[in-house]
Image (cartoon, rainbow, N blue to C red; front, side):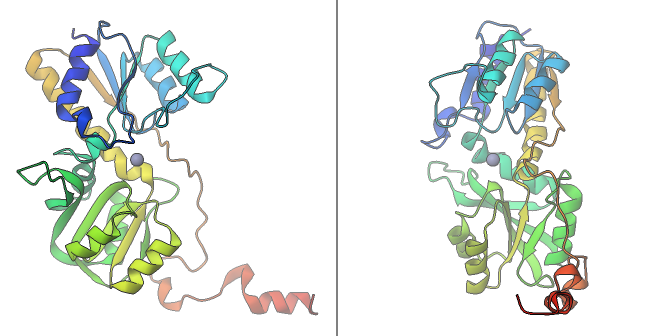
Length: 304
Ligand SMILES: [Zn+2]
């Protein structure tokens, strides 16, 4: 049975911590380097539900994409929700290890897993890492489809292939525009619009898109945008990472039991679709339902 330090050395070889962004906080958060590891759980978020899941599973190591303490801390008191997670982990002999921006830019990395979940053919990184002579590492991926597909169909495809969330997939731009080349970036990608434009793609799939960047991006060029739940765009990486660790375990004869959490930890928990948001209804988009302006005037009877 390998020790924690042997397993984290293998993880660091996949996602070297020195390749993480300066502001990031990756690596081992808690755990005894000499402790034996038999069972590993991969998840996106180091939240209490996931920590509890690691306990029920009897995991010795929890590997998450998001850091527990991105900005550092001066306390791990259990009176704080993050400290409670640390207490639960240590009390149950579970180590926590984080691979964040070092996994984003890796080859294969988070966006390769996202492209793979959608069966998209990756042709290269969206923002290449200049230190990679092979030109394969970097942020986001540019992908090609075998046949052009309307943006709305691509949105439906993404909704079907990515794990279900309350948010689903939102699209911006002409729903009937044809997409042949698409950029994808797991997690928050609205800082990548310049690279997306420079790549000359027809569409961009990412998460956490906001009104003004989207409005400006779609006004500047005929670009389709697909906005998925942040968690859903990064979850496919857990499956990829688990498969990578499984392969390492086989090679070393470690006999690790490697699991992927399917618990949805996206913070958005409900979504109410507008009356005109059904597929195809966009052609007749306009005020409808209870908030129709004329309905409001009709019912009020007098100005207020
Ligand atoms: Zn993320």
